[in-house]
Length: 279
Image (cartoon, rainbow, N blue to C red):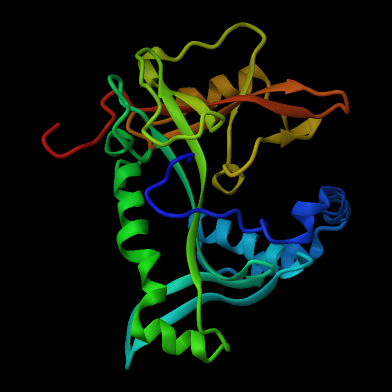
């Protein structure tokens, strides 16, 4: 987002990695060579929800980032025995102490005008971009200003905190159809297409395959032996139920190192999508 309804901040904005990106590159390459610490960290996650996985990845990076002190993650705010909510991340950097709310979202645009964020739906039709932004601005970010949160923060030695969000994800545009970007969207936002089963056409020679949910967060890269042949994809599509949940597909092209990398992504939805009350 370029113009969100509430303050936003990149979680690493105050780290030395932001000032010296070559150090971040070195850390990432070392992790790529030996990812056991990350896998062990993720193994502690009981939830299968994509948002929790996203938070866990950020918490791992923030715990390693030079110049950042991760004070708390998923800090529960309670009133006696009742849980009021939690603060995703509380960290200290060169700019002070920050309460960050982290979210990863994928929204599909309407077939008409898309300027209104409320017109952008999640693939399961359970949430909307406008609703998520309103919840962040009206509930999640103000939580750290409440009396019970101040008590919890005081136990961490924190008196003042800045509440900000970081919202990542993709916006998917209809095909056929046209939707303008939602109000406030960054012109360089990550994007894809969505289309119904009846409109699916695959050009000769293209390589497509479904993307597992935990891999939705970043551009896909697949080893040569794991890239599907056209026949394998056709067989998968043939047995896919007509009312199956939205499927995230990626088109893969070969790269210089012999692997296959994502060229585009598409949400394939049922012919009667979206599932809304009154439809």
